[in-house]
Length: 157
Image 1 (cartoon, rainbow, N blue to C red):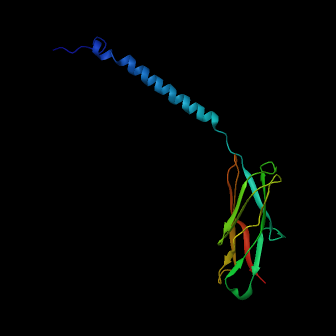
Image 2 (cartoon, helix red, strand yellow):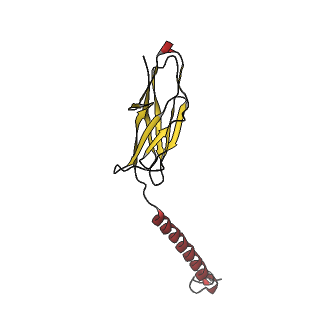
Image 3 (cartoon, one colour):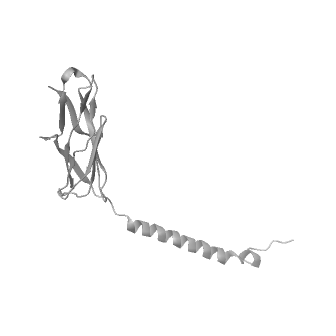
């Protein structure tokens, strides 16, 4: 029995055009999906945030009583300013300050400021004289901002 060449064998090419068309259609659909995904991608902008006031005092430092060097529970308030790269205020950004057992959150207003008034007590243990709280800000279209040393808590007289 003699083997026929691929081109001379009608059985070998019968299903080939259908298979090529199916592969081509699937490839075009996949390419269209990738192109539409790339067109929808918009790079996120950067934002910046800073604590401008803590418990009525300018700056980013919260001072707690030294009294007896024991465990201290302190309620606090905080004002945060959020701006974009051009220095313009960002409205509607979510602002969270947390750490040391305490936390507070708010949304920025049209001037880009958030005022955290409903906060949990922070805790300084007897052997702890200072600590830091984290500031995290997120807004639609912006990269999330995080500063792990944004608010300084210090035990003082």
